[in-house]
Amino acid sequence: MRKVLVCGAAFAATCLSALAVPTGAGAAVPLRDPAPPSAPTIVPTEETGTGAPSGDPETGAPSTPGESAVPESPEAPPQGGTSGGAGATDGVVSGQAVMVTPALPKSKTYAYGKASRQRIDAYWRPAPKAAPRPAVLMIHGGYWLGGDKRSWKYFARRLTADGYVVLAPNYRLAPKAVWPAQRDDALSALAFMKKHAKVWNLDPNRIIVIGSSSGGMLGTQLGTLGTGTRQVRGVVALSPPNNPFLAFTDGAKPGAPSAERTLRRAVIDLVRCTPGETANAACWKRVDDASSAGHVSPGDAPMLLMHSTGDFVPATHSTSLATALRAVGVEAQVKVVPGEMHASGLLEEEHTYPQILAWLRKHSG
Image: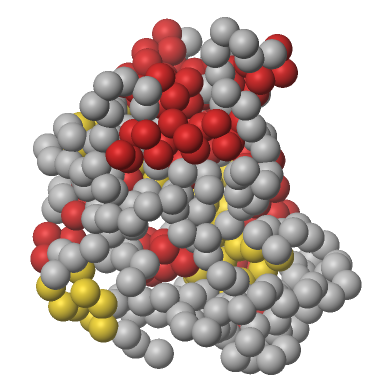
């Protein structure tokens, strides 16, 4: 099925907006028995009725994530708004011009865990005789409190047209799930992606993470935890709050815009405590663990970190991380785009997607 999307003219070639969201979403469908290692579990959908619980997805009935995928009710971020400025919605883009979406790749939704949020959408273009392709693990934003994998649908289609296999996971959300549950889920989604790489003909050694805002922070965590290159080949992060404690303190400043105050409250929900003089050792341990720079070591993944000049997650969240990475010999670039865009809103700038694609090709080759 082809849909017409409304999006910004400058962004018409790379549209990733979450505007075309399905209606009538209900509760997640219970899983069947786990599939054998060679075949990941395909989650049944409301429209298809019975997705095959095992077997090669190449022979199953296709289901397009966001159109006939698991009917989850995405939890919206704490406040609405446009893609930039103080009222920005974390990782969501709005726009004006009309365009047709890129040609549809093959797509399915899988379960990588038992929790209702542990679902992952795969997008790929079958080519039986082709060599395994590089891949992207794409992580959504939403203040760690909301957001949904389906917001990446159109961007995933563009990347598949450019030769990549794309998987986009949901993850457990704060405050119900305390940190590091979100990182644990990102790691589990990555492991699932590698374990079943042959299903989508992807190369498990050529995976790069792309994340927006809180999803970008999860990406930089994957790139720095342990020896980051053992997990991923690189990280592209758009407006990542890499230092939650900095976000916590910035949101308390007099005159802080509403988005910064919202991010401050989200940090409290993420670590389920209030950092400060009265915070206990367990609280500070979670706060420190959530700072990506604290995990930096030689052998970490190279990174492309992007913000806008008026981003409510300022570039200082990335410059400090980049400095730490460079100090141990890891490549790290920080690019600042003029404007007030945030997260995936940065892709409205016409040069952003070509820069990302060139970086992907350099580091996934």
